[in-house]
Amino acid sequence: MVIVMKESATEQHIQQATQKLESMGFSVSRIVGVNHSILGAVGDKRGVDPRELEILEGVERVLVITEPYKLASRAVKPQGSRLRIGAMDIGGDDVVLMAGPCAVEGEAEIHEVAQVVARSGALVLRGGAFKPRTSPYSFQGLGKQGLQYLRSAADEHGLLVATEVMDVTQVELVARYADILQIGARNMQNYNLLKEVGKTRRGVMLKRGFAATLEEWLMSAEYVMSEGNDQVILCERGIRSFGDHFRFLLDVSSVPALKERSHLPVIVDPSHAAGVRSKVPALARAGLAVGADGLIIEIHPHPERAVSDGPQALLPDQFFILVEELQRIARAMGKRFADNALRTANGQAT
Ligand code: PEP
Ligand code: MN
Image (cartoon, rainbow, N blue to C red):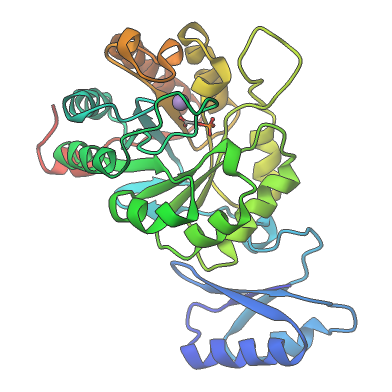
């Protein structure tokens, strides 16, 4: 069950409702939203009369949710979640763009990319400082040094930072530098990691595992949310399939299906699905057309020198052309292409 508290509910009302639920045998987790607090109650709801809870002071609605995910369910917020992370507003009418290299490769390199990202109007600089590589002999990332380079490059251009955290022991460190903690496809079901990022107050971008169903994916989102963090963004990045004409099959149909089942914002990563840059623009356009709230795209000014995922990185000029196309798609869909308000306000446009 999910109990949505009124905007006017006081701390005492929330405590009373929590105690009532606990006395009925539920374990309760609490989400503090922008306007409402929400209590997720997990337990045996047979024999429970929701009216007993509805009459409590400060309670707005009681929802009996049959899906195994509760806090992530659309029923909690039929209008959808709008998350504010720094200057970014995602889940409403804005289309949000995140871009950058696969990995942070050095100070000069990330500053060069940040300039391109800022010029495009994108809000978020991406780049891995901890890299999950298929081979232990491949470049593993610059670690803390990479986070420092990434943060300073983003700050110089008024951008937010999205970067991957691979392990529970890194969460505290990465959260110091990042606005959005990326959980990679390979870690989608690393439940300890999900719980740990759930304890932070950073945005969490949860990528879909290669072979995950939507229910498994939403249950992973539930892990993060049940720790009190509702700033979760889902990222479709392609799944395993039998074709050999792509790296991963971009499951664009997951976007409208997620929108039906969950209130969480959804973004699409066309780069890891495409595997080669020639296919990235088409998949990016498809992602937006199918209703994604944003896109995360790998770009690199010198992809031949990239330490990882060079073949799928768009060159800056290709990226600028794509952004113009995406702006037209956003307009056609009645959405706004979010520009970097902070940067414009600071007059730092490059
Ligand atoms: C990445 O974003 O660079 C990455 C490793 O993504 P994924 O976890 O989707 O493979
Ligand atoms: Mn990559």
